Image (cartoon, rainbow, N blue to C red; front, side):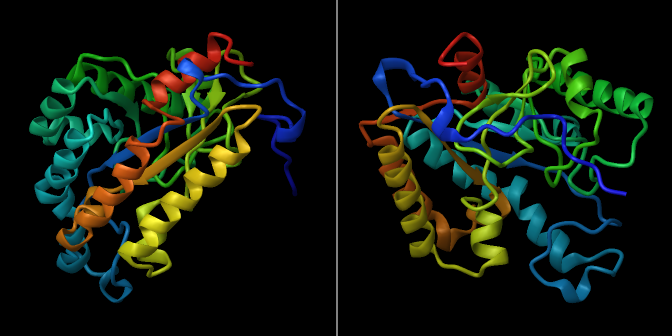
Amino acid sequence: MSTDITLFDYSPITEREAIHWPDDKRVACYIGLNIEHFYADLPGTATHEGTTALTPDPLNYGWRDYGPRVGFWRVLELLDKYGIRASALLNSDVAERYPQIIAAGNQRDWAWLAHGSSNSLLHTGYSADEERNVLRDIVGTIEKATGVRPRGWMGPGLTETFHTAELLAELGLSYTLDWTNDDQPYRLNVPGVLSVPYSVELNDIGVFVSKGLTGPDFVRMVRDQLDQLYADSADSGRVLALALHPFVIGQPFRRRYLDEALDYIANHPGVWLTTSDEIAGHYLRGAGA
């Protein structure tokens, strides 16, 4: 049995009303900082597949756990250097376990997005009623910890059910990052809910872990992505999403390359350096929708 997606319609980017970002900027850019919790008895993102069946798996678990312990704070230093407010893709389990991270983000007025409960558990296989309860708990936990109700969603591993967007709307969320099929926001066929661009290509896991590329490759990719989006945006704005994971980009030998990439973005005259919340809000207020 085959099923077509009905959540959104086909819309070629050449046939849309122009999008205009604030201050005549041409590329809206946000940093999607994945802040995640993993369980010791469940598999997760791995740097070495040979031990993933072990419980516990110190090799891979320790690599992931480097993120909240060390890597996050190294990335935070660089975001502060350029005055960048992160769009924090937050597992609700993080909110309960790493209060120092929540405090650091609140001090900097970050955007908090709901990112499932844990990245050890994909957001799939639920009935509508089960998912409603799961999402209510995730959103409520994050709101209680941060003092801010999330406006956006990205599933762990970019996972959803066929009901997710409707249930997000019930909870007052207005956008999802899961559908990585565009360079612009667009309206879903659920009233009040957008798809906002995210990237599995310009993503440190894809670059360094999946493809095995280097720091200089990463910088070149960021520069080339921005340069092309800027060229494309002569008549209508585009979105640059940079997806980061502290246990990957936060490694010491990669710091200088993240620094170079952020420097290029932050000093580009055509960039609106913002959050995914503000991109979604601006679009919903009539940036061209």
